[in-house]
Length: 189
Image (cartoon, rainbow, N blue to C red; front, top):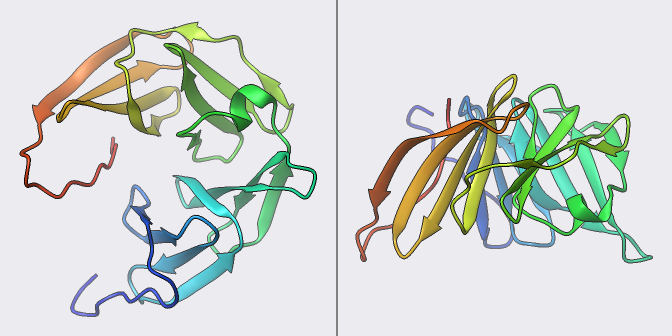
């Protein structure tokens, strides 16, 4: 980011998240999100939607419609709407969500099952049982068929990787958070 600080105009952001390559920063307050180019500090776009995740340089947002259904939107780096869907309840009712870098799939975990939702086909693959820690706090695609999951419980973070086809997983690392520490999670590859 060089010497130029990034300022996020408007309300105080309760959510800040960098894209995996560090080129984009999403700042949200629960009711709106804006995406900033970290190299220039320029706001690329804003929307009255909640930030749900990055998939490469694409952004996934969610919002409640007038009829109280959840709508997911995939946006380009410039903010153009690439896809807008009303997903099945299993997707709509759970967080966190992970958008694949190609913008075609959303991954999520529910009750120790790993689900992949195909946005174009509007289909959820059957849940794959995984040895998943409780309290998943972050999930990201870190390969074509690989997800990285962060789970935090009692100041202990466990980072695991999973194959979305088979559910095979392994602990990548585990660490404790000091009581007075400020933390941020980035799944990374």
